Structure formats: structure tokens, C-alpha cells
Length: 151
Image (cartoon, rainbow, N blue to C red; front, side, top):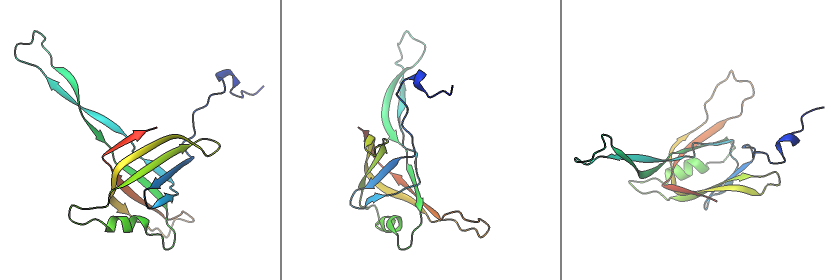
């Protein structure tokens, strides 16, 4: 008899291949990958001079958020990344909200991350290689943001 997973119960992890990305006022765009979503906190170490402990105490400091990298196929007349990147002027850029949704089997959001004050820091057009038989053209954008929330 084959293992149908019933011994583990009916709860399964969500697959990571079914997701949706929406960039405020640019709309939903289909992406091949969305990577790098993370947050961490820096550690502040301190010890006062008359402490009986011969070690520093550690306290949480400021939060830091990583950059995300979005990759998608190249389509004729699709310049969404280049247009957004072209908006950058000396210390000014239109910052946008990015919503990333991990979808369940029915296509409903199971988890949502909302990235605040996002803007592109790097755009990489597709690489070209005449020896790759039928690989699609993929472009990528690296996006920085100030914080995110998860719902």
C-alpha cells in the first residue's frame, strides 16, 4: 500500500510555486521567482564598568531588511522595470508598496507580505547566449524597501 500522507494528518505545507506580486499603481505582474525577503535585528552589546558579570549583555538593536530580487520573462514592449528605474533622480524616486501573496490551492492568499517604501536599486536585462537552445529571456530587478509586515 502506498503512503498517501494520512499518517501525518491532512495538514501539508504550502507550495512555494503559487504566488502573486503586486506593485502599487503598476499592477500585478507574473514573476518566475521572488527571493531574498528577510528581516534581522542587529545586536547591541554593553557592559558597564562595575558589572559583577565578566561578559557583555546583549540587547536587540535596529531592524534591517534585505533586498528582494524579482525575475520574470521578457515580453515585447514590457518596460515596467526600466520605466520604474528611470524615475530615479538625485535622491528622489517614487516609492511604492509591494504586496507578495503566497496562494493556496484555490488561489486565495494564505500569507501576505507588504513591503513599504520600495524602489529598484538594480535592473538586469536578460543575458544573451546563442548556444542555449530554448531558454526564455529572463530579466531581474533588485528592490530595496524600508520594512515589511506579514498578515
